[in-house]
Length: 331
Image (cartoon, rainbow, N blue to C red):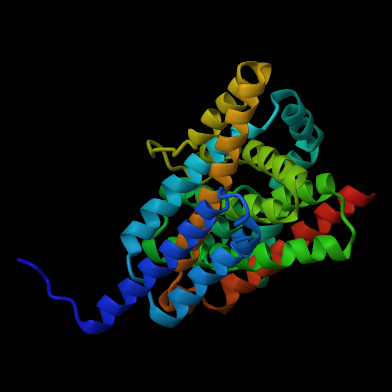
């Protein structure tokens, strides 16, 4: 039996498809000689803004499609970015920030617990999920730790909503702050990788700041994301949750394989370099589309569900890690 859609729902879906089509066509027109300057306005922050504006004014048009596309297209895009990176340079960038990554992950979890539980009296699971998302890689960490923690759906929604809101804000304000502080490409990439929650916003902010910032931010962020595994294991012991499935971010390993292939195979010939650059550039375009999907996934219900105390915890924890990372970079 076919469910008949009312005119408002149909109009909403038509607007959604139209925005998505315009973004995709403009991104593809970038490959046409002489047209690129006219479509340069399609950037990751613009795509995210369009998605957010649509979701908050029209509502969600295709929630299941949005969720699936934002998840898988992000993973494919990140793997594609690996074809534009040199393994040796990336390892050097990741190694440089390793010590601070370890300190910041543990420190963020401890400070998050203190702010959430002791100061704001946020419930245990929600507070822990927000701290985990801030410490490692946003929604991915929450999705991995939630089942181990036996978190309820509403607790997961509040934590994810908090992280999502802050991610959207970060993508807009971090490049502005970086330019205001005259941060170099490497410094901004390091700062974004540690202080911004989700991989999507980290890569988006890095891409908006510059090519080198993108490479540094992506490498450090994905190195940091591997902490999902020990965090989930530690959570199972702390909260005595045995037999729960741990979600491993396998796309990170494919990202590393892409770097290896680019360094030792494609990088040996001029044609290979051109192929790698094309894949990398196309992946960046798909990341822009991904950010539209992510923005369109927000809803007014999520904003209402978050509440003031979890949001305050998320903001305070975010400020602490952002300022702490800046101090580490400059001192």
